[in-house]
Image (cartoon, rainbow, N blue to C red; front, side, top):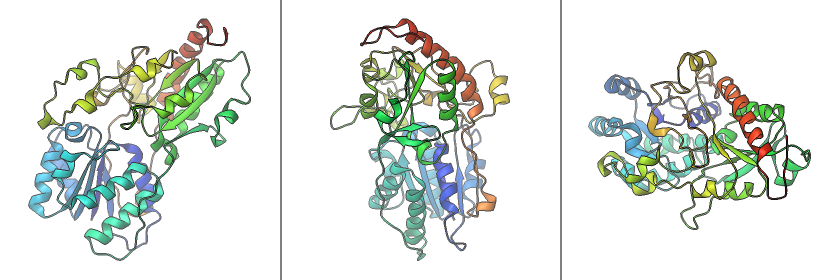
Length: 374
C-alpha cells in the first residue's frame, strides 16, 4: 500500500532496514528507483498496483525525472492516491509540493524525515504515512535531526579530526575524501573503506569526511565539510556533487522553469573547492558490478542519466557518474527485501588510480608548511 519512489539508492537501503523493524501486520511497502526507466506507463503500472500512498523524492525535482513526475501526479490524482512529492535538496521544492495531493504540512514533515535519511527517521516516516493516510494506529515520532557531517575511519567509525590525524607519518600526504552522509547513516561504506585502503597503499594518509552536501549554506554561504578539511589536506578526492549543475553549460540557465530548472540548482560555483588550494579529483561511486562496469568503453553506462554526473571542479582532473540508476520493488517483509550496498569493486579499481594520482600530485606540490614527498 505504501510506495516510495526515489532516485537515491541509499534511501532504498535505509528503507529496507526500517521495514525490518515494523510490526508483522504493517501495510506492504515497495520501493523503486525510476532512473533509466524508458517505458513510463508500464513502470507506473507496476509501482502503483495496490498503492494508496506514494512518496516520490527526486534529485533535481521535476527535471530529475523528465515527464515522469508529471505523469505520476496525473495518475495519482485520477486514482485518488495520496501523493507526497519532494525534491532532493534540503530546502522545500515548491514545484514538487504543488504536485502533491496531500496538505503541504504533511509534505513538509515527510521531507524532514528524509532530510535526516537515517533508518530511525525513515521508520518513523513509514509509521507517519500509515497512521495519517491509512488511518492505522501504529504510532510515530516526530523527525529527529542528525549530525550534518563527521569524520569516519574504517574499522573505527566516527572520530575527531585530531584522532584521524594522530597516527599520520610525516612523510605521508593527507588525502581528503568526501562522501554523502546517507552512505554513513546506512552503513554503505565499503567503497570508502576500499578507497582509504588504496590511498594507504599508494603512500598517503586518508581523511574521509561525510556530509549532507558540499553546496554552500543558504544563510552564510559556507561549506562546513570543506572548512573542516582546510589546512589539513594535500589533495581531495570527492564522490559528491559539489557545484550545482551537471556541467559548466548549465550555468547559462538554459533549462525552462517548466522542466524544473532554477538558477539556484544549476548555478556553477566551484569557488569553495578552489579555496582549498589543493588538487581536487572527482571519483566514481556506482552500483553496478565490476564486470558490467568493465564492459563499457567509458566509466559510466549510457543509461546513467548524464544530468546527475558530478561536476569536475576547475582544479579537478575528471568527472564521472555518482550512481548507476536502477529500480527495485520490495515488500515489507525482511525475507523478501534483500538489500545490496553500493558495490565496492568498481570503486576499488578507480580508487587505486585516483589515490595514486592524488599522492603523486601531493609529492610534487609544496604544502603551506613546506614540501612533502611520498
